[in-house]
Image (cartoon, rainbow, N blue to C red):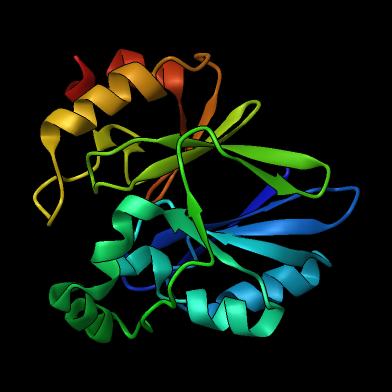
Length: 206
């Protein structure tokens, strides 16, 4: 599969580099912190970032946006419903604690069903509100970047501003679990899993 993982920041955010083998263009998904850990991987793989994708607007997923953008001139893309999170004082204060930098306003606002081109490949945007109003997953055949919507054995917390347990469960049941059971789920934190494994074993989805 055409992705690489680097774990960044004190909250151990999974930052993924999704790339096109033919063109070497890539998307940087959730660069939450420690850009100095992300740059060497991009260089080692001989990749050209063409877009920065945020599964949601929480600072542990956006904290290195500005550094990635400045180095590669890559636009930032996020769902429009998470724009208010970028200016919340609690978010900004938490970011300072984590050593994260405030993210610039996104260059592209995503909506459900969008296709994000990465070289000769693409990612489909799936709006999955619940963990935050603008949470999204990114799907390519066989893989789902789930952000903080779905984890191995868990689901996203909903006690932060804008969170909704009702919306999260609806998103999971109607938007996420409908994908083939063999689909590999690449979450925002923790180990990878599959749709089938979560249907069978995730206690929050019973």
